[in-house]
Length: 498
Image (cartoon, rainbow, N blue to C red; front, side, top):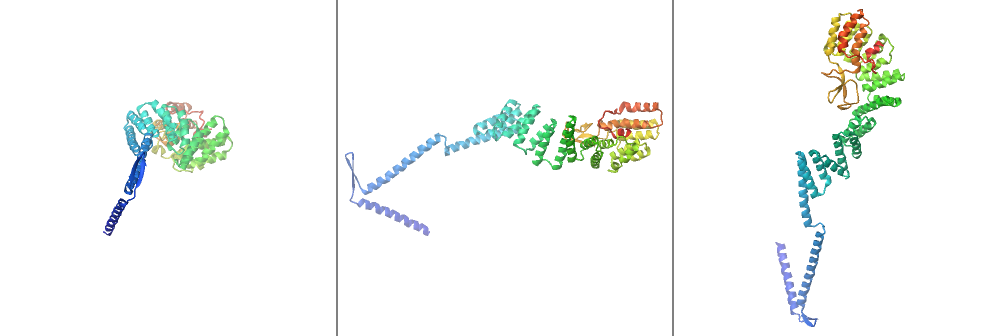
């Protein structure tokens, strides 16, 4: 209230001062005389004040008019103004709406509509890094390969979209079956984005299928550094790649390189059976039986495998069955109750003609886990103990339709492979040694073992040669696979015969 009173007093004072000033100027008798073009003008002090105020107003108005004209010229020249900002925002709204419609069209599977919306958005926004991606995907969806390729190549020219463009070209080349070009593009993409997991997996798959083992190892290391692979998985897969490279080097006669690579593979993954077998056999060729023995026993300690037993037998090929049984004792003492250990001990005892011991060693394995191998061993035991042909034939008949036992099985598609290999139809490093149902494919060692055992035992029986040949010809020669005598990896039973 006091402030209102004070404002009233100030207003009254100002009005009074102005009134006093006007009256003062009006009462002045002095005047100024100005002659312009022969005409004389009398200017009193009050009139002079009015003219001064009018001149000031005129100057202000002129300045404003000049500013308006300048702003108009700037607007026509394209400079940002309130009006231009309004129209720009309106254009952007339409552009982003078209962009959104294009993305929704892609999600709905309408490729042509997505292309039209993206092209419209490009006209509004001028943002090719956004619209080209929708155009490329829409073109692929609509089957317009030419437009998709053209758009992806234009994206490669822009630093902001180069990786996305190359990635799209990689996928396109893979669809076309051009794996060589796809691999080169994937290498460029990985150089741009070393931590991209999809490109890492794509390049690794292409390199392994192309048998570029060294390149695949580099890609695998990049995947480890990027944190996309556990260290134990990396060691395993790196060992597989080193083993594959060692096999190729050995096939090319590069013995030193093969030895170095297989040694590295065995160091990285001692439980990798093919690496342990190859390393042991190379050590045997180099007259280093102790090294071979150490490698094989270390792998056997992890998981018994018939290929390991076959390689272990090759260390002393000239030993007698009794000597071999003694030398195998350390392996037989590991993993008691394991089916592979039981079958191996049975084979060794049969070779030593200890048939009661072989029957004890195999136990009830032929009933609990009937496989071609266990049932054939039972036939060999029966023949060795002098049983009638009908008993032997019965066991062999069961073996013909029994499961082949553990095999190399692809974890991806379930396909069975007779031998281990680094790359299968299911991908890289997909094979696992396990039992699968419904497959009759057998590994080389197992396939060669079945008739050899029965044949070797038949040589030691008291039956006549004609009876033996007739019994075996009826059952074995017709249905059981014939052993490959040129097999590079002889089985345990064949080594025992030697």
